Image 1 (cartoon, one colour):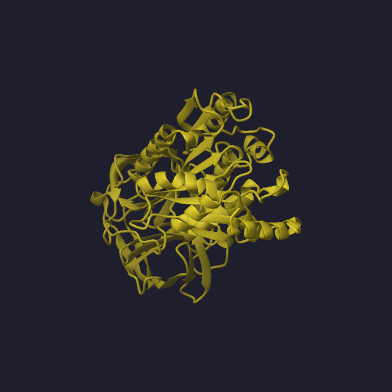
Image 2 (cartoon, helix red, strand yellow):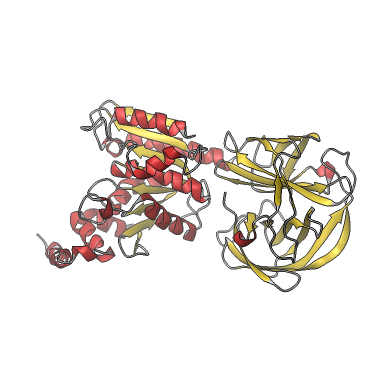
Length: 505
């Protein structure tokens, strides 16, 4: 035993005396003692090893230094294991494919009771916070769970979807079935996360036919899990049945790992090639348009147009897409009686499906067709500031924004380079739905100042094209200060300020 190991044993012994107060330092020391080679490997590779915010455990984050990562592997270790083990096993593959790695230590280092592990919701909260900090976008992460980690992968995926984050485009459940008596899985079955919480998730599974616990972790268990996740909306992308594999056979066979990562790369490529979030229009029908945002397999859109009286109005639709967001069918909802631009909060009245059905079909990331009561029209991305401008990690997110305390009105915001185009959908003093827009150059990298404009006389939902005009050039002043990529402070024309955040659905 070398001097380092002896020192660690002394430290660990002291920490074990107060195991009830086990913390990040304790579990870090134990991970290092359990396999110093793997711990040192993480350090040598420049991994960021940090205490969790609750000081109960630690995380390992690593990303390639040469370029922004093309995806993120989020890995949950198995029984009696450590986050450094997962990093050691995944890092060579991640480096080859330009993926980052996030591994969380979710076992507290001693015991086998529920309290000796993070529960899925606790674990997901920590993971989501770190992914947000690192600027990870929706549908660019791959969740892997091994053994006991696999048994938690089902609930973790449900929490990701229900949070509206939709980080996980792919989940790999590796040698750990969906235990139906596990409370989070019971919640999934009971509909707590919605009828189809796994909609849009591409699922991979592995089982080894020589697993010593076939009904818990082996192929019978994983076959049952396959049917279970499919029942709740998942798409089974890949099922690896390894005739020679045992419980840990996935990582022991490079062919298994590369087959799975090829499937992950295919999903990431399909997501990247899907339609973009932001402003869409038909160039032949200038004056009305569509703001469309995709989150995971979900879409929320609004059409900005005009009613029969020539007044500006809007309708919305939202739901689940298919084929990596390339198709959507839903109904157009209308609202009335809500909050004005500077008025007090009023709950609006919904009229679901009042304007008929809507169908979207996208041919690539910037082109598609829209079918509704007005017929079928071609739509394409609206280039107001340079669609080719790269999106930076610090840039305010394109999408829907709102104040949760003022449900019923909201704001669609897109940045292209240093240009901003923003629309507020709300209500006039008579309770009619109305929209105002503003566009221009950012005042700074995190702020914009301009005026709201009101349009009129344009094309209705079913009418022929007619040119819209500005009805009111200056409805009032607008100021927005982006505090983070997903939070902001909006200053209204009367000087009142409201806190905005990204609308997650």
